[in-house]
Image 1: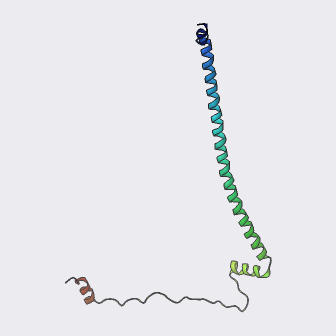
Image 2: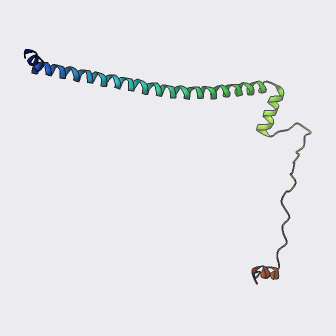
Image 3: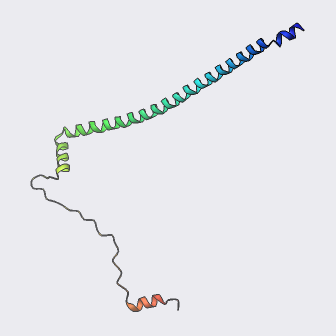
Length: 124
């Protein structure tokens, strides 16, 4: 009987419930921390992917710029750039215009009044 009274002691029940609430709060705090760390890891993975894409773009731009610099260091490259920018030519060069052959079909002759009348009443 003394054992039952010791288990049903109000102070002991209160302390057990207090300990249970503290453990529950500790679990909630731990879960909240894990959730925050997971979210930060997801954000950092997305930022890493964006920075890798930006790095790839910058490396292609760098290689393109190096190719442009190499072409501009030669006489032929400088001449090509001047011709492109200012539309100039060497002395003695003439303008050549290349015209593509016409691919359109010739226009049909206009229909006469009688042909249009026959077409309008073709169901007769």
